[in-house]
Amino acid sequence: METTVASEPKPKRRSGVPWRHFAPVACWLMIALWTVFALIRLFGLERTWYLDSFMAFTPYMTMLSLVPLIFAVVLRRWYAVAAALVVTVVLGTFFVPRAFGGPDPGKGPTLRVMSSNMDIGAADPQTIVNLIRTQRIDLIGFDEFTPQAQRRLSAAGLTTLLPFNATHPLDGATGSAIYSRFPLSQAGYQLLAGGFGQEYAMVAVPGAMPLEFIAVHTRAPGYDGSQSDWAKSIAQEPSPSETVIRLLGGDFNATFDQKPLRKLAATGYTDIASQLGDGLTPTWPYDGRNIPPITLDHFFADPRVGAVSFGAQKVDGTDHRAIWATVTLPPA
Image (tube, rainbow, N blue to C red; front, side):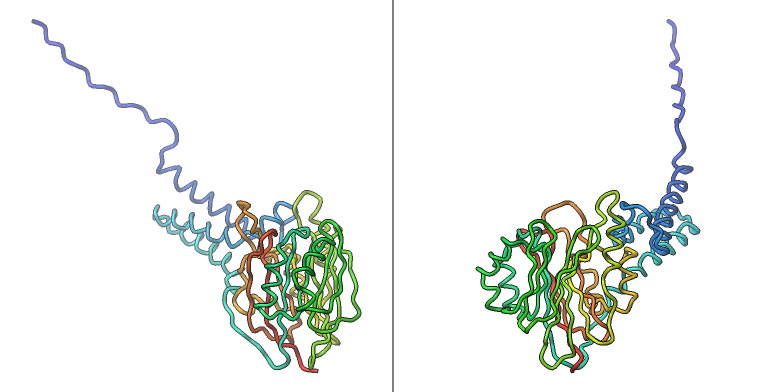
């Protein structure tokens, strides 16, 4: 009887790059990617509309920078850990200061101001009027203010609460308006690069220095060829003035992680939300789109203006949250 001896199976040859070789390379590649992003943000090197737009998501990129850091720790690659940690810290310094602050009211009359982008007039007027009533708003600026929106807001009772107004209703996204509890003067409408426009007016706040309010609505860098108009429209916003108190409020279509807005702030403005530690409060988009929300709406104030409070709330029918703030103005 013959005995058959089974041969041992030959070990399978592993194909591809061994994990122990690939993992460190992948780790360093991720660190390099976030390093490039940090350098672009640090030196304002964005030169295309998609990079300009992507910079607005710096807080989210900072949180994601923890991925290569954790990966490096798991691999026990300590040089990689140090490099990844430096990148995360640098990215964090860009936005973390906006989350820390507190009231700095100063002395003088109090003003409660609000801004609402109506999304081509589609925002729910009753919600806006209710907010004006509950927040005791004295002054509001509207973007994308249409003739239909004007009629609907009036029917909802806006002019009863804020009887003074300067309006420029237009079809589409270019209309603007200001409504006030106090008398307005020297009102006008400014057309910005890219086609958007904004209403402005002097507001006679009792006991305060002359106040100029601008309902800001600058262009957005949303497609190829738009970034030049976007940057120009932000640059068209006036700097602070020695003779009047200037307050800018509205949809700037920019965050502090984008160079044009930083340049405007550097002319001397205080961002009210950041002063109060609310600078990361997101305001867009709030219409169901799967886009991480970012902060496009701001109040930029003369440095002599004190900051008391800041808030934001979703309004049905528009992709922007309404924002409001309580400030104090220098006494006359």
